[in-house]
Image (cartoon, rainbow, N blue to C red; front, side, top):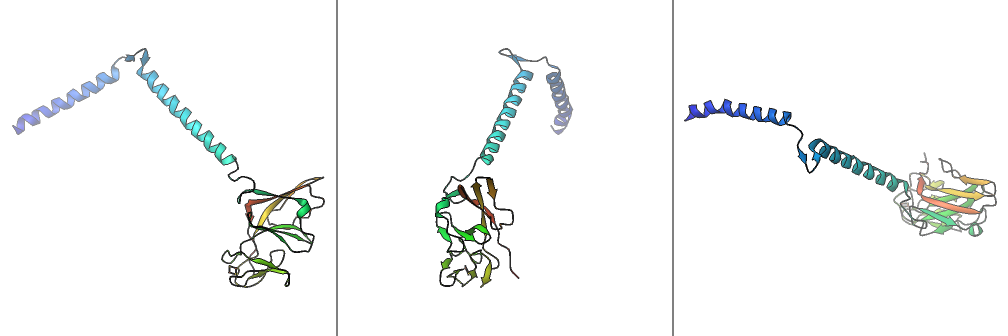
Length: 199
Ligand code: FES
């Protein structure tokens, strides 16, 4: 019985080889007027089209703003008429989580969360500085660190300001933005510039 199986094995293998060769050499089979090659070509084209469609969708998705205006992560319009006067108490926008600080060197939008552990600090008129109620960090109106456990200055958001002579934007270091006669102001809470660490 075992020797019969062994004898039949090469025959079966050669039959499979012959079948495979026949399949390779077989003329194109037409199914309802479409050859196999055409069918495969259509499948391949559809796959490429689908891939390109997905790629295009992904590019559009990334290009579109993810946050609407007035939503944290997006931009917030600031009415120039409501800007605090230079050197006076900064103004808080609790929705945008930023303070507008109008300093002698220019305009700043400071993140409202403490750089220690993220508490919301307050402006204290009496001491003319920001003070964090959680662990006592203190910062100047410019966001510069004064004392406490916070490891760095307050973070800043990008400002985009339209003026009669053009649009100016906060630089990469977040320096105060000198503006005169602004016609429109926007705070971009999607663009945060980390405060510098102190010694
Ligand atoms: S969270 Fe502000 S000092 Fe700790």
